[in-house]
Amino acid sequence: MHVATPVTRRQLIGGAAGGLFAWGSAAGAARGAPSHRLPEPETVKTTDPASMSAVEAAALLRAGRLHPRELLDSCLARTRAFDGDIGSWVRLYPEFAYEAADAAGARLARARREDTDLSPLCGLPVGLKDIFAVSGLPLTASSRVLEGNIAAGHSGVWRRLEQAGAVLVGHTHTDEFAIGLTTPQVGNPWNTDFSPGGSSGGSAAALAARFVPLAVGSDTGGSVRMPASACGVSSIKPTYGRITSHGMIPLTWTRDHVGPMARSLADAALLMSVLAGADADDPITSLGPRVPEGGYPVAARGGASPLAGIRVGVSTNPAPVPAAAVQRVVDMFLDLLRSLGAVTVPVTMPAMPSSLATGDRVEMGSYHQQFGDRLGLYRPENGGLAAAAVASLAVPAGDYFMLERDRIRFQSEYNRMFAEHALDAVAAPGCAVDGVRRGELLGVAVTSGAVADVRWANYAGAPVVTIPAGRSADTGMPVGVQLGARPWQDAELIAIGLEVQAALPVWRDEPVLAESIARAPEVPRGTPGAGPDPTNTSGAAAPVRTPPMNPVG
Image 1 (spheres, rainbow, N blue to C red):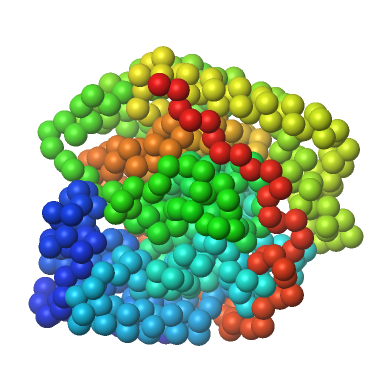
Image 2 (cartoon, helix red, strand yellow):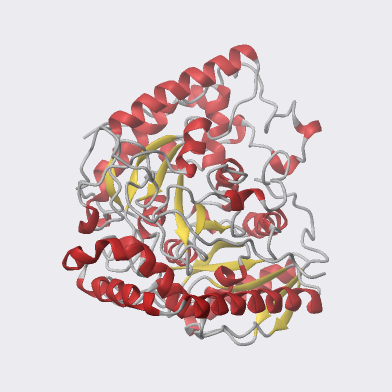
């Protein structure tokens, strides 16, 4: 087994820090809000690098008190020792990762010598959901349908991460083609008899198990929010079009959102600061307002009533209705909001147009029609869903675009609800059920909304953060809460979530893992696929993408 190199006490509390960095340093505080600062290295008390938060590890990496190779050693050693029963990884790329770690170490050392700025992600390990292309590495969407497929180029997500100096550890499991809501290949680190949620279940499990501090998922119908809630980690479903989806295997183009995931909301915001912004390969990313200067906040401002004046809507018509044990945790969360100064307001969420489900199937069928000769290679329950999606292509084009009008009406009603109640956010359970056993709910698509009230955010294109709120008294499984806002209010929403998470730091709780040797293959980088799409498949690029409506009021 690969043995981790621990950070020594001397490294943590002493040693030369080298130069300071403008982003997040004391010297740079005058140029940006304190909420954008990394912690001071002396405040980091965690000694195991794999258990450090991303912002803590970033602070030590910048100060020269931790080397990217040491951090990677610790993450890989933990993965190799404990991932067997969890199964969060499809494939690991240690050779590729160590090359990146050494390059990041050199970049960090040069930046200290020259007293220059550098991305806070430099040297941080990350996992990618198995739908994001990395040139020369396998890309299979956790499906036999794409067995042997090699990415032809970089996804926009990985291009940004690589430029920032992030270290790719591996691809995490998704429910096959991101279709379902359980990711049955993966066990929940809190209890491997339970599902980690889907479809970004592998990413959430890898975070909860402390295999990586950062991961990227996607959310078409709650696919980062439900796994984050189920595994006790955090996620951001940004405004639609805020992060590029170029080079990503799609589920439905008009609902797919790239989602930063991490153990804490601060860590997820650090990741989003690198991922968000315009990408020439994905024109929709240029249509919204600019990313805030300095990125997104990573620390709470604090104070006696940090949420004074904030109004949070609470749905009177959740669908589905949460289990009693889940609702008890959510009620305590709402009590905390009020204790921080927020006002909660009962609201009726706009009705979901049933016609939009047909549009989802048409978009899914448009991509999956290329695999018509491989339906027998899907998992049986997903093969039926894929075949039905392909059959839906018989829907007349005029009908499809009329369905898009329903989406616009829904977005208008959602924004009007915020304006009429003067809301800053809405709150909802991250998942309505109190845990799902592995093997349950197979063949239920994430677009169905079967286990959580999540679809409103995908159809509205609105940003949502999900943060851990506690654990069920009945099952012991984590419970998360969603906080949503109006489109393009990502920064304001993250700031609200950071205040709540500072007062409720349950994200620091770690599951107790049973030793179980990892089974994921360790794969070297090879020759890129033929392309031309980075995914090395057909029809991945979206033919139709429209930005969400500007908020009313």
